[in-house]
Length: 220
Image 1: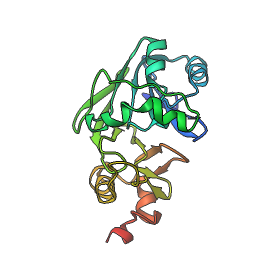
Image 2 (image 1 turned 45 degrees about the vertical axis):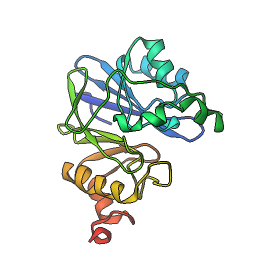
Image 3 (image 1 turned 30 degrees about the horizontal axis):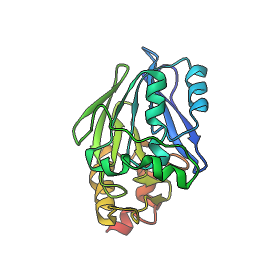
C-alpha cells in the first residue's frame, strides 16, 4: 500500500469464509505493527507477519461482529499483546462471539479489550499515530482509524467501494450510518484512500462521485 520510503505500510489479508479484510499495519521505521480486525485464519495471519518481518505490538478492532474480531482473543494470547477497540457500545456483541461464530463455522472467543476507544482517541502503531473516530450505524460501537499523513483510513464495515454497511443487524441504524459517513469520513478529504472490511479499497472522493448510497448527488 505504500512505498518503502513512507512511514506506514499496510497489507490486506482476506480471512474466514466471509472474506473479511484483516489489515496488517506496520511502522517502517520500527517494523512494529498491528493487526486490524483479525476475524480468523490465524495461521495465515501469523505467516504474513513473518513474511513482512513485522513484530506485532497490539490488535485493533473496528467493531464487534465475529467475522472481524472472532480471532482477536486467541491471537492476542498467542502473541502476548493487548486488544484496543472498539467503542464500549459494542460490548453486547463481544459477549456473544462464541455463539455467533458457530453459526458460520468460524471459531470465535469473547473478550473485553484492554482499552475501549472513543471519538478523539489516538492509537499508535510503532511511531505512527491514528486518530480514532466513533462511527455508529452498522453497529453502535463501530470505530474508524485514520492516519492523516499517509491519507489512509481503515473503515471496517461503515463504507465499501460502491456500497455502505448493513444496518439490519441488532442496534444498527441507517441514519446514524449515513451521518457517520458524511460527518466523520468525508472531512478526511477526497484523496484519502480507505480500506474497507470487505472488498476492494477506494477513495472517499470516488465514493462521493459514484456511490449509489452516499454520493453527494444522492445526499443532496
